Structures are given as C-alpha cells and as structure tokens.
Image 1 (cartoon, helix red, strand yellow):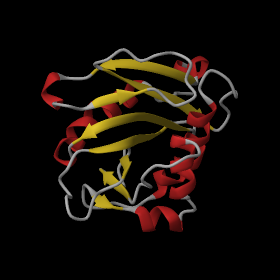
Image 2 (cartoon, helix red, strand yellow):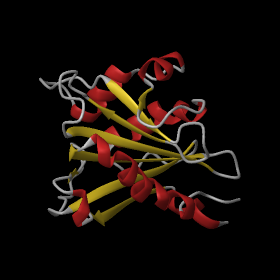
Image 3 (cartoon, rainbow, N blue to C red):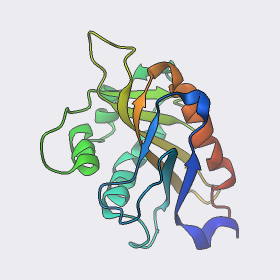
Length: 184
C-alpha cells in the first residue's frame, strides 16, 4: 500500500552549505514559519488528494504543473516555457498562485532538468537576459509517476539560486521522490 495514507506532506530539509547563498521560503499562505537555513518541500499525490493538509496556493500550483510530466526529453536547463504552454500550463497564472496579487517580476523561464525522464524537475524563474548566470528566485517543481497512474508533485520555493547549481538542487530535492511515490 505504501504512501497512500500520506498523500499530502511537507518536509523541511537543511540547505547544504555548498549551495552558497540559496534560501528557502514557505508558501505565502503557509501558517508555519520556516527556519533559516532550511527549505520546505510540499508534496501531493494527484489525482485524489484530499483538499486539506497543504496551503491552497500549493495545491493549485501542483494541479497546474501536473501536465509537465508529459514534456518530452530536453537539454538540461533549456527553457521549456513554450512547450509547457502548449500542454496547457499557464505560466503567468502559476506565478500568481506563487506570489499572489501585487507587484513582482514575472518569471520568464521554465528551466527543465531531466525532462522526459521518470523524475523531471522544472525551475520557474525570471532569468535576466543581460545576466543569465545571476542568482534567481525560483520555484522548483518535481514530478514522479506512481505505479497506480497517480502523479506525485513536489514543489519548493527558493531564493538566490545560481543557475549553475540547479542540477544539484534538483537532484537533492527531487531525489527524495523515489521513496515518496505511492505504490498500489
């Protein structure tokens, strides 16, 4: 039976020292503070997760990004924004779910890491055209397929992420999905 009784979870992970200035953030509507030096991973199983246990913004983001599991293989850190939109993922709406209403810089990229594999990850961020290597604020989405056809979506909100560290961050955060995927 496995993970079925834990279809929505949060997990706080210590940020490794070799990630430099990377910071973690709780969802804007999460009532539980996040300690400095940690990141929070929100995880939900779709479809069928009860509508409780996670902040509403996180549930909406998870539902919105689930189609990304259907993206074909792509070069790591390639911008898959146009491909995501063809699958019906509204990146502007996704940013509004993350940040709420107000003024903020709209993310312009969806950087794929291991797209087309059993465990893809996607960083939704604003990449400055004149500073493509500068640290960014991003949401990392991890997707994993369960043997029962469900999709496990995990997400974490991060700041000061150097694009050169994205692969390592994805491996650490999304690597936990293998043991979290529901089994029949």
